[in-house]
Image (cartoon, rainbow, N blue to C red; front, side, top):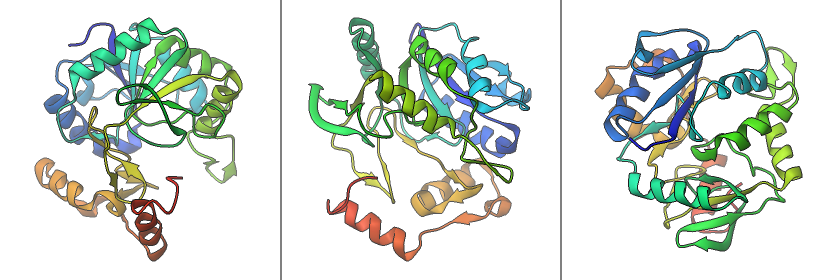
Length: 268
């Protein structure tokens, strides 16, 4: 166990078919680490962990803020329940990342893989500065945060939801709103990059924290990027593939993915 570090997992009961898979892979590849589940229900799946129950009637930004206040550790790794580990986490590197955050007051987070805002400006070997002037400085991907910074960001956020559409209404998106605040405050972050390859359509692999990003898209199994991996997980955890529809590649997706791989198109 890494001291003063917690994994925080945002979840809700509509995704309960993911919990066995998520916890099984987490226990295999990052065992004994402290975990908080932010959830709208109690579940037997969470009995060995800390469950923080939120009010599902309120907006996401307030939900997340109220849950973060219950976390005791100074450093957190932010995850969603459809981020599935597939190999051992590099604990020694994460310990080094924690040391960097402790020793650098201006660095607020370290993203575990290449993505938006990536620059070629090195902080140190395999760590690169992010461009705080561009969109997607904040991202709900696997990220190591100083908890107090993330807590302040959500405290300042307007009432907003997990997506841009809530029911039949178009609403503020929490990820976009937090991103705006990060850019306004010029929050500084780093990105880990060990020359990992692009996986599927848009996601880069992570050497430090090897995980499948968003195996659920629009309520469907993400076969566009993780078909082979998901088929193995279905077999391992006895999950019925037909329980959800399949999100598949189309001609446009394949073309964009190919252009990214040959460096003729930016990541986003």
